[in-house]
Figure (spheres, rainbow over the protein chains, first blue to last red):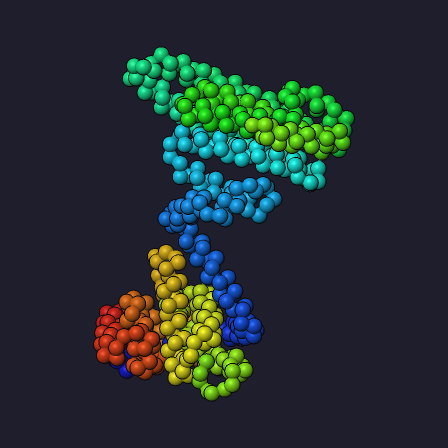
Length: 305
Length: 183
């Protein structure tokens, strides 16, 4: 091919043109958008923003950055502001995300167990907040139910982490002279507890489900539900829960894993209680006075402390 | 915006007029320019729209001169394509659908000529596709869009001298490729 031919070929490439229909359409769209200055920026960001975000997250570095951001955000007002939110609040999502971020960063099983206990505590607080809310009966019960499920999940994660610690411990125990007697025993009790409380949890889960399906509008069911509730004074529920979780945290710090488990199952029982009561409260009127007294009693206790 | 000394009230009206005219004048070539870089009709369409949006944005925020508007739009287009590639894996072949362009030509010619043409076009398209990106770019700008060296150097942000050298080398490479294929 001579140079001349080459060049004329290149010139022929000019024949390649955009579709007439697209050209016209795109022109109309553009012109209508630029009539008000703000829209173009928005559209542009539509085109690029989502794509950029998607691509940003394709890299693992980005994920780490976001996690770190939320961790760092633990010190900032915005995340701190999310601390007392409950489901339904707009910042609740931020709270949940920062919880997940903290958990992702935690590497030791001890730390993970600690965090799970903390989160369980958060769920418990949220349950109390939801119960105290002036909300319709049904969504309240649903929320409490979901929170209770989450609570159980946190307890379960805490237990899993504790299990891991126990495994590591029992592997190390033959080499440790001081604890050689104590450790195997502890891990036995440990696993016994694990089994027991999980079973315990199962029973409660079933009961819970039965009660939920019995339907909230049935007050007759309400009275029979009351009989199933273990006898813990209603007034002290929320308070006891915090106490139990706090003690669980303490046991964990002191590496008394058996003790931690005991407290965790205590906490579990209490939250089941609250959950049941929460549903019941929605139904019968007599319960509403209990609501008031739960709060009142908790406040009293706090003052007395 | 400072092209014609209009009153401030007229600014946005002026801008709109200038923009509209720019769109009509340059849409084909910008589309082509982007198309040769990304190889897909749909992508080229999306990117071209985005380019003009950005141009509108730029016009409103900065002073521009009519003379350099075209080069400006090409620069925006160039950067848009670079950003586009940053956002996706680079394993795809750029020129995969250059054949699409051939169909348009076919419709406009009578049959014999179109066959001849398409054979040559295939040759050129293939060769172009195999060229280095910057070679292809400068060849298209110079020989397809027929921009001046001055303008091209402004778009590529190189000196005129460098642009000329680049063009020389690009053409040489293209010729070598096509000669190889003909044999």
